[in-house]
Structure formats: C-alpha cells, structure tokens
Image 1 (spheres, rainbow over the protein chains, first blue to last red):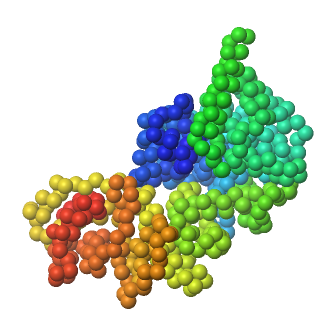
Image 2 (image 1 turned 90 degrees about the vertical axis):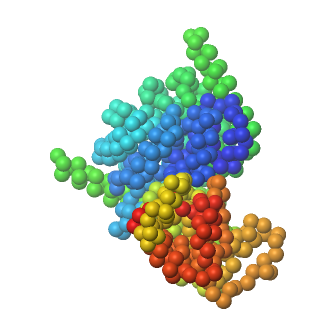
Length: 280
Length: 255
C-alpha cells in the first residue's frame, strides 16, 4: 500500500496486515524533523519500498547529483526492500537554465537514449548499492519516432544495467486507451508476454478516472483498481509468478480501512493464483 | 566513437528540450482533454504538482490570497524561478521577494512578510535535528567571553515586520477568532521561528534578542555582543536558559 500523508495517523498507530508500504522518496529528502520521525515509525512497523518520482533517469541533461546523494542517504537510513523510479526524463537545459519539468516525460527509445539511461541508472545503482526497479509510464503525447518498442527497450536496460522492472498495470491500460486500442486487455497481456518474468520485481496497481472515448485518460491514481486491471493482474500472476504488489491511490483518497480492504483483496487474488500455479 | 556518442547525447538533449518547450507552451486547460492535447496534460500536471508543493510551503499565503491569486503567483514563480533541484520541498524560496514586487504585494503589503514567515517555518520543519552540546558550556569558565561564540541551530529563523505576523498565524490556525485586533506597529517587530519536539513555533522577541541572535549568527563573540547590548532589555542568563529550553543553540565554541 502507498503510505500517504492523510493516512499517517491510522497507518502508524498499529501495524496493519500489509507486507510492505511504499513512500515517495523525495518527500523524505530532509535533514531532520517530523517527516523523518514518521518514516522511522513506519520502518518499525513495515518493510519500506522507496519510490522515486523525480530522478529523471532518461534525462540527457543528466540526473541531479544532489538528488542521488539524498537518495543514497535515505536508502542507508531506511534499508528499503525495493527502490524504484520511472522510465522517463525530467531534466532539461532550456534557454540556458537547467530545470526540472515536474512530470514523467517520455523518452525517445533509440540506441542513443539507451546509452543515457544506462549511464544514469548505473550512477544511481552505484550510489545506493543495489539494483533499481524501472517503471513503465503513462504517455500522453508521443510522436517521438521510436527505434525500439517499450518492451525491447526495457529488456535492453535489464540486460545492460542489471536493473529490474516495476510493471505498472494501470499505465499499460491508460496507454492502451490513449492509443485508442480496441482491446486494452489484449494489448496489456501482449506487453507482459514480451517482458522477461525473472526481471519483474514489483507490480503497481491503481485506478484512474474514467473518461469518454476521444478524451485522454490520465494516470491520476484517483479511483479503485478497475475490473480490467484486476484481469490483467490475474494474467500477470500466472505469467510472472508471485510478485510484490502495491496499490497506489494518491488523489481523492478513501479512508485507510478501504485501502486495507483493497490490499486484502489483492492478496487473496495473489494467493489463489499461487495455489493454482502449484497445482499445475 | 566518443564523438558519435557525444553527438547522439547532444541530439537527444536537444529533442528533450524541444519536448519540454512544447509542454511549457501548451494551453493550460481544465476539464477533459481530447486526443492531441497531450502536451496540455503535462503542463497541467506540472502546475498541479507545483501548486500542491507551494501550498504545503506557504499555507498562510494561500489561505490569505485564495486560490485564484495564489495560482497567478505560482504561474509567475514557475516562469521566473523554475524548479532546479528535483525536490519540490526546496522550491519556492523566491516567493517572498516576488510577492514584495508584485501587484499582490502592492495591494496586500502584509503578504510578503507572511510569505517569509511561512518559508522560515517550512525550512525549520526540514532542518536537521539539533543536539546541544552541554559540555561546551564549560568554555564560559575557561576562556574570556571575547573569545567565545555560540552556534545557532539550523531550524532557527528570524523575520521583522510592522505587521502582526504571529497573530496572523494564530488567525490562520483558528479563522473563527477575530482578526479585528490585528494592528500595524510603528517599527518592525522581530519574530523568532524555531522547532521544538517536531513542532514549529513563532514568537515575538525583543529587538535586543533579535540583535543578539543575528550577531551570533554572524560569528561575533559573546563579549562583543554583550558590550553592545548593555541595559535592562537584555538579560544574558535568562536568554541562555530560554535558548537551551527552546533548542535554539547547538554548542559554544572558541573564536
């Protein structure tokens, strides 16, 4: 479960029945104070997954040395079970100024950009002393003339950097909608089929606000996991085996018990799929 | 070989900068967006993240200005001082100065000082934990005070304003309380911001206390400062006792 500020009270009062919680690493890039105390309390109760949203690993302008140093310090403090960020760029030099774009922007998938990602991922992995998980993103404007498919590209990165993959099922479905794909489920499972199962270290599940045909779907993490996403997840479990799974809910947050029920539902599905695999 | 790699990286950097420029030039639209409006999604996301971050850093300013004026300031800040650290918690230091020189600052001159107070509170909340070295108090017995300095904790902040900043913060915390008693001082009134037990506090302090802390921060000796602050307004033993209780200092040191 993603641990967000409004749930600190109930989540940290007592340990809930969760295998781990995920926090956004950048929220804890502080030198001290209440935020770190909250994180230390969370660490007492749960295993922690550190999810970064701002490293911009695909940035040709390079990642921020300061951010990498802060992440390494946080990793040392928390000893997380997972550390992840996205396949995207965030940093650019624009009009002579280096700036962060505040969102996950799509990388043009070429041989040249592979070299940039390899260098940036390597730099982060060296700093934190463990492999990163790389997450597929939602894309809203993609006229980038890629040389490689997303799955080919990810496979290259896994091989060349030793990173692992964080498969975000909602992002697959958002992209399918935005590509005006007639069969989002089929599109998502075909994507999963092209990914090496051994490289997948985590799955993200989330919901997004439904939009009418012709409108762009946005990965806003504002709704329960959709029926189609659960179906794709079921397929993923059969294809990938048991994988640590996290439910993200970041906007229009429901009460903590609602999230716990969503997590319990997810675990039941995972256990059932595992039992079925064992029978085969 | 290296030349090719560098050329490829430069070409990619150019492509990414162009993509970013298209994001920043996209119309900032609300509501549902049609296929083809993807760059507007990125621009909207950028503004949403920035607004959430700035609202955390400047809660009192947001409350005082309301959403429309706060968003206008945010747009100006993003254009003039784009995020450059990848940590939204560190973005927005320039807002108080921007407010002072903006139309909002002209219409509402108290907003600039309130923004400074919000920023100091935010900084105090993120500062490293302070640990006072009580053993260093022995330096006062071992050396002349002209050679002793006192280190101020990182969470400590100072601001001066003719506006009643502490009362405005109280009003923000409890809007049902009347703001009618708020009045403007004839001369700027100093306010001390500090963190104690994970809570951020702001209190009015005397001009002498303000000058003393500023002097310590500037690295001046205890002896020099005590010479300039003679009189009943400043009582060093009382100040020291309170500074330790409030966790304002980290150690005494030899200059």
